Structure formats: C-alpha cells, structure tokens
Length: 587
Image (tube, rainbow, N blue to C red):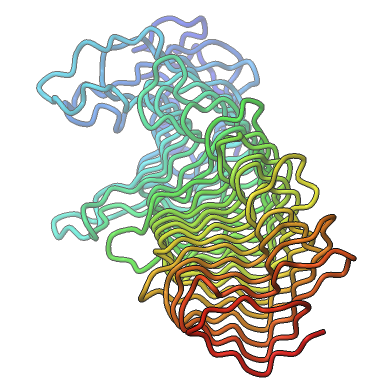
C-alpha cells in the first residue's frame, strides 16, 4: 500500500521551521502508517527542519534520534524535499535513524547537516566526545535489508551515512547485531566533517555508483575519508567487524585524506572506481583493489597504500590488480604480508616518488605491471622479505628501475628495464637478479650501472641481457662471508671500459657470461676483480667485435688465488702470481 504523507495532518512544517513539531509529526506519521500496513510513503516537496538529538540519552544522543524509520517501509522523497538538521551543540545526532529494523528504503531528496552552524563548545562530562564527530545524515544501526538510493546528503559533523552494529562481539553481556545487507546506490555524499561513509559493524554491504566528495574539508575531523571501513577492536579481539563490503563504480573527488580506507575490514572489494586520492587496504584482510582509475594533477600522495597485518593474523591476503594510476607522488606502497600486485599501469609520478614499493612487508609479488613516464624509482623493496618483481615493464627512471635495501630473499626476474639511468641496485640485502632485459641505451643523460651491489649483500645475478652498456654492466663491492654469483649474463657491444667489476670478498663465482665489446678506441677489461680471494672465473666468453683491442679480457692481477678456467678470450690474461689458470681458449 502506498500513501502520500499529509504534512498538515501531523503538524509537519514544510517551510524549515518548528523542528520539534516537525520531527514528532514525521515519527507519528510513520508509526501510524506502519501499524496500518502501509509500506510506501511519498514525502512531498518542502524544507523540513529536524531535531536530530535524543536528549534522553546523555551518552548516545544519535541513537533513536531524528526521524525513526520502522520496518517494512519505503520513503520516496520528492526531489525538492530537503531535510535539515536543526543547529545544535550535541556531540551526536541523526537526521534519519534506522535501528534494529528490516526492509527499509530511502529514495531521493536531500539531507543536510548543520556542521557550519554547529556549536562545538560543549560535551558535558564526556571528555572523549569533545570532537563532536557523531552527527549523521542516515544512521543504520543494527538494521538489515536497507537501501539508500539516489539521496543527496551533505555537511554533517560526523558522516553522511553511518553503518554500525548494536551491541558488541566477544562480550558476554551483550548481543551483537551488525547492520546487514545494506545498499547505497546512486547517491551524492558531500562535505561531511569526518567521513562521508563510515562502516564499523556491518556485513554484506554494496556501495555502488555514488559521487563521494570533499570529506573532511574546511578543518575536518580525522580520518577525513570518503569511505572508512573500520571496526573497533583491541589487540586481536574484534568488538565490531565490517565484512563483505563491495565498493564499485563510484566517483571520489576532493576527500581530504583518502578516498577509501579498509582500515580493518574483511572481504572487501574496491573495484571500478574513479578517484583523485588514495585507496588503502590498511590492516584489512582479504581485500581486492581492482580496475580503479586514480588520477591527480599535482603529483601528491600515494595512490594505493597500506598499513600492515591486523593483530592475530598471518597476512593481509590482498590483491591489487588492473588499476590505472597517473599523476600521484607515488604509485603502490605495500606493507604487511601476502599481497599480489599485478597488471597495474602507473605513469607520470613525482620525481621523488616510487611506483611499486614495499616497506616492512613479506611475501609480496609484483607482476606484469607497466611503469612509464615516471622519473622516480620504479620498484623498491625496503626492510622486507620474500619479495618478487616479475615480468614488469619499467621505462624511464631518472634514479633506478629496481632498488633493494635491507631486505632478504628478493627476486627480480624477467623484467624489461628501458631508458633508465640505473638498472638495479642492491644494498644490504640478499637478492636474485635473473633473466632481466636491462637496456639503458636510450636514457638521455649519463647512465650509471645496469646492476650494482654493495659489500653487505648476497647476490645471484644470472641470465640478464644488457646491451651496449656505456658504464659498467655489473659492478659490486663485497666482503668475506658474502656470496656473489654472476652467471650466464649476456653483455653485448659494450662501450664501457669494464663490463663486470667486483671488488673485495672471497670465493665468488663469475661464470658463463658472454661479453662483447664495440668500442671506438682500444682498451678495457671484460671481467676485472680487485682485492678478492679465491674467485672462480670460468667459461666466460670475452672479445671485441670492432677493430679495437682490449687491454685484457680478464684481469685478476689485483686479487689473489683466483681460478681462471675454460674461458674463451681475445687477448692476453692479466693474472696474479697466486692464480690458477687452465684450459682458457684464445679466439
């Protein structure tokens, strides 16, 4: 049964006056309609001033406040029906309250808060409430089967929409009743002081096709997110849980801190959105961030961010895939554990930013990402473990394509590095650099090393292709106790003096490398060691393809106890008297 509300009958003022009478009139009308079996009410055009404060509760004035919507009710708000919360000084209030009911729909109309008329000076005896961040447009509190469709909501001291639970989990004296099966579709949510949507205790939520803008502007209240998914917990105990939240096809602009943060939710999908600020999986578990378009013009902020692993969990189990990122300071910053980053396109970042990064992370895979027109670092693993960079296309860094710092078991495999100043740099880490194409030939300035490592690193460098290096192709400094393997790399048409140069350390292996020179003058050394002990230099091929000759294809004269075995070389060896030399073949 459908009914058009008779505002005069219930003492409802439609001219923006008489908040108390108007609020009481709406609540009486909805209650009578519900009792009469009316399930759909059309609310005519008008300006309705609402008393959103429940003065009977000193600690929860936002509960059972404002217009209290009963079960099995659809409210069709006229496009020119506007609900305004009356200015007040309460730390909490609600314009519409949907609490522990079911089957409720609110469609159309406008709902406005009073953040710019609010009195922030009072908070009674509750010091922790002094921020006044609990003023809501629609407060869904332990209700289920709720739809909010095509509503224009703005300017609340807290949030445009709050989805929260009645009671708490893991507490014996209360029953936990989360908001369930909530859909927010095609709404305009703007300019609330804290967040535009907060999800603290809710399950099976769909947020689709909305325009979500300007959360936290004008001296807002943290966190100032477009959407904040954040249940309350202490340590590894959850008292609220946001679960199964889908955020799809929304537009986010102007939200102060982030567009979306899954601070502590479970099974969250953030897909197909357009955003001008960060999206984060926070401490969330089982998060998918997919096929979003993130674009800025000022090269500020990190496009996709994170915080770490939630207490009591082994990892985040996050997937970041198919996103397009442009014009931020940095691209994707991974923290925590068990994360896959694949198929993303990242471009036009700030010169000091990083496209793909980890910090204090473990078990992270970066694969098939495309980074271009980005002058800063392209990949960086820092203070992390079990990190893999695989099959990424990295084009145009003014610093380095891959940087590995203070990390363990990092793999850089089958990446295509092009037009960068530096290929890969390993510092204080254990790393495998294998089967990469490191082509620095088109870099417009002076290039650095294709692959470099320091004396605090263990490195396995194998099967890389480095064409026409004008500086050292592989350069490193090592120390006793560190491991260096340089094997089967293909270094062609070298123009530098020394393609492979290793200083210090003991028992290194340099084997199976193919090195050709194409210099415009004579000189150079194909492989040179200095201050090493016991290096094995085996089965390398070193020669010049031009008419200019090398000083020596292999030089170990400044090292001791080298074993120079089975190499194919053009020219004479420069050895130390302590060296062993056998089966080397002139070509």
